[in-house]
Length: 333
Image (tube, rainbow, N blue to C red; front, side, top):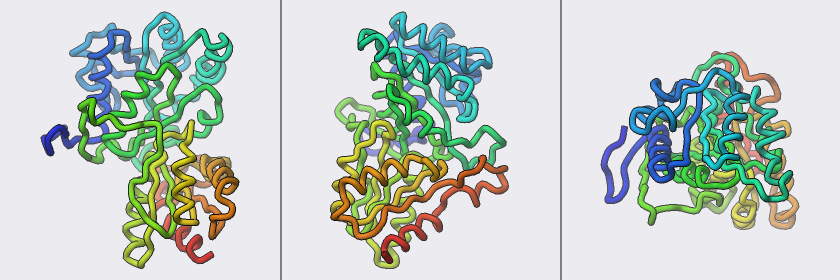
């Protein structure tokens, strides 16, 4: 659903922004193909591809068998033949049958061919929890991909970034793991699709300026961190929130500048803290900001356990209280 708003922009959900972005990509480049389970006539489980097969045909918006390894393997072959496939993995936990194709083939062919082969494949994955789903439907696998050289890993947090970052992913000659925060699918915001409004998708962005502490997040946790910053302001604390947007590569320069101003850093993500993205960020920022830090870098995230049944996910996921607890500990140091 989209509604008109200020000149040049429309108010729409994050899900609609993805649909519009895919429509634009299909219209602009006949080499762009969409592939996935039930993405055609049904429009996908979440309806991200709703209406696209009707308008672009079943040779460009293709329903596939329930075989994730085969889907990604076929996408690699299509990319080698000059196409630009965009694959939908129905849920985060379903990507693991395709992990071998992604890690041993998709990520490595460019280096293996000494730069002669490019694989412009986008793999869209709805990820994260808080939707009351069953096992294998609420995983946060970003670090499993960020650890693999040869892949770009990104996650939007709002409708405008969903539109523009997916445009950037489709145009990239590198393989991209595009993680969609499914619990934010129905969050709304303004999206300006004019070329003149194109942002710089790769870089992190300060979404709230502050002076006392930096909160860094990506994807579904950015909204939680903004809520935490608003709550902290009522107690007189001025928090800066940085949306990383890209998990591989990470825009450390923007983050280091922020920490240089605030002297404190808390990193939040849904994925387990153990060996999570926050560990790499904490190490890098500590190396570069050692003499500016007023407190240890703290991390907030999921527990090192299998994702729990839905009735327990509120206790598992880092919410407002756990983010604010870390903020208080950092400010007290």
